[in-house]
Image 1 (tube, helix red, strand yellow):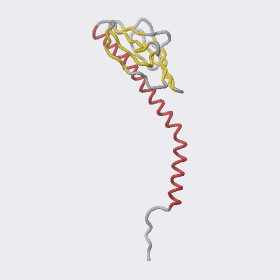
Image 2 (cartoon, one colour; image 1 turned 135 degrees about the horizontal axis):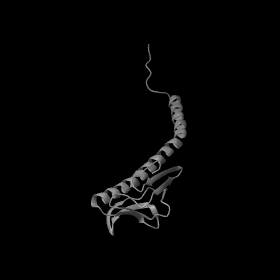
Image 3 (tube, helix red, strand yellow; image 1 turned 90 degrees about the vertical axis):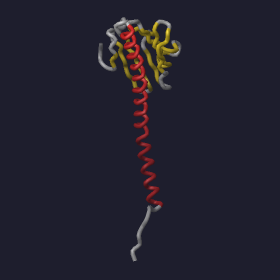
Length: 148
């Protein structure tokens, strides 16, 4: 008589689980680095969105629009506020924990009615081992890489 086998033995299941555990242990650091880069991309894109919004508002309204850190004591990573004079036009959320955003001595950035700024401003973003630079050129152009 023929005996039909169904399922797996306990030994086969234990070997398969051990292999999955080893592979997961090896892949975890690469996955964590990927998550860190993804958070960094999200944060820097949020800043770019805030700056682009402020520039377009300045051009559309033909007025100066200021971008500033929401909390000057905590810095740019605590959130970004777009203002026209003293009136808040829009607020952008704070960056995720562990992020640091530095713009040198700049505490605010003002786009003129043509969408330009007085001088080039470089934002340096760091999160763990990930570092990115975003530049605002005097013409108002926002660059992720390269020079003005």
